[in-house]
Length: 129
Image 1 (cartoon, helix red, strand yellow):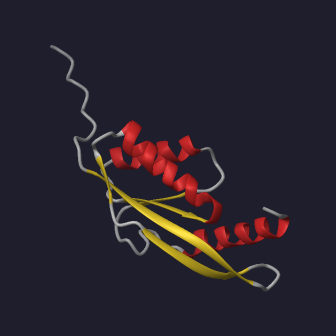
Image 2 (spheres, rainbow, N blue to C red):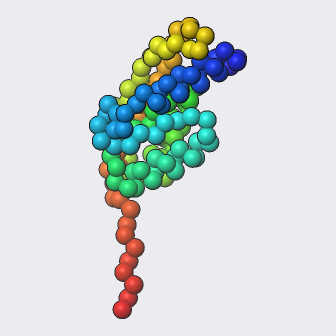
Image 3 (cartoon, helix red, strand yellow):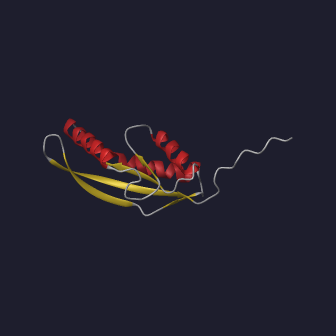
């Protein structure tokens, strides 16, 4: 990706993250926005939200981060919480944004909702006595 593409993506990501309201259009739940951090950072965020009882946890990404969002969902589903998570209706979209140079740019977006269906985290056993 060239400098223009990076500028468009950065501007779109900043716009997208600041335009959302808490809870967002999906209602109650948590949203994890995928960006440039390592994949496992987002995996741990999603697992922590699911373990806290929040449902659904929506993984959102744009542009080049869409592949990483799918990776995060698959690692959570197949390695960390195997058999305990269901994937909801995945939504894809194209958003038309204006970059800093005044040009319109189409940016693809994805939202992947995950809900915990299996047993939650177990409480520690009470000490004897």
